[in-house]
Picture 1 (tube, rainbow, N blue to C red):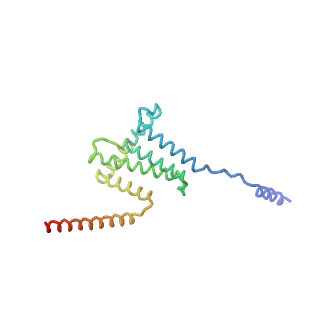
Picture 2: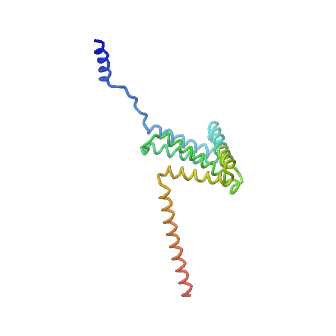
Picture 3: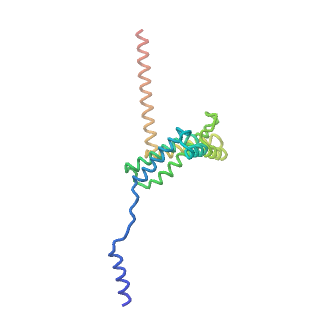
Length: 195
């Protein structure tokens, strides 16, 4: 008798439809990301007309990641458009984390090129900190090398292309340019010979 009673309760629970949470539509998340991106661009382009909160955002993000903030707002808007268009097949927040790594590596590269090309630090505190960390651990050249390859690796991974595809594309482009240069040189020699 005791065995039948729990079975009936289990059968009754199995027969009831379970209440499942409806997932939040990706369009809403994409719309929010796109709106935040447009607002961020507006604040960075017009900092004096963006109000107190916009000026604080510009100052904070400007000090943190410098001019790479434009890349940050672009990537945020890109993610939003992809979510609205239903182009994301995996978890979109994973892509946001990877885009954060892309921004951090761009900051490190821009700040590591500062002694060579630039006179000022356009990468903010994050770029200066990462650049100094890489320079301390690997030297200035090694730090720049690491920053370049981390940025290139993240860009390759995000683009969906393999390094071999990029190398083949580069090789074909170089061969075509070389053949065009040789043809132009031959045409110039013929013109000189005729003149």
